Amino acid sequence: MSDAAMTLTVVGCSGSTSGPDSPASSYLLQAPWQGRTYTVLLDCGPGAFGQLSRYVPPEQIDAVALSHLHPDHCLDLCAFSVAARYSPTAPWEPVDLWAPPHALERLGRAYDPMAGDDATDLGTVFTAHTWEPHQQLGPFTVTAARVAHPAPCWATRFETGGRSLVYSGDTGPSPALVDLARGADLLLCEAAFTDPAPGGEPNPPGLHLTGREAGRAAADAGVGRLVVTHVPPWHRPDEAARAAASAFDGPVEVATSGARWTL
Ligand SMILES: [Zn+2]
Ligand SMILES: [Zn+2]
Image (cartoon, rainbow, N blue to C red; front, side, top):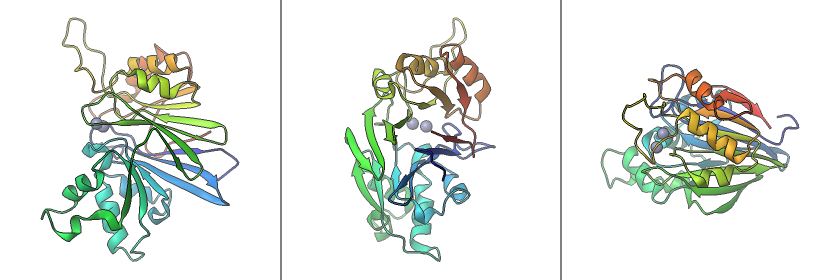
């Protein structure tokens, strides 16, 4: 990679499910470290594992970070586990996994239909760590904060080389997200909801952001740029971005599978 402090690559950005144009949520964060490139896989939703090798050999991933354990953010770690155990390059070195509590049990249940089988123990594939407020992943200083979502979910701030990127995970409007994102160079923020129609049912609280709410979070945090993501296949990403731009004066862009930002 170039002299950049870090690179964000969108593996998948389709919200809530995989979509016709993209896998579900999955991103790569890369930064120089000890004479090579350090790679974090940030979420691994359905369809992500297959496209990952377009960008990096999966066995070279240094760490996996999961915002939360909803299926659209973690289920392709089952595919990762199959490759780590049975592909021609197997067995892979165990990879550090930062995640909510009980991640290995949750992935084990998804991995094997015969609960209790030895194959459900993914401890040989992943070394699990539960999110703490602060941790170091290679070159990245990572701050994690609980946000507003029914499944326990952590937004994360990655800092290296004087640059910073914040990923919202899934969240409704959240002061913790704004605090975490303050002054970040880039906010990668979900925008799964649309504004309710006038007089219509309000969106359920504590679940997702509208584009406008993502824009407001970006404005309140004073970030350099906003990238909206996690738009489900039944909504339009360009409309999410337009709604975000109505609340945020800075640059607003849409995540697409394969898009890359260099900070
Ligand atoms: Zn989601
Ligand atoms: Zn979720």
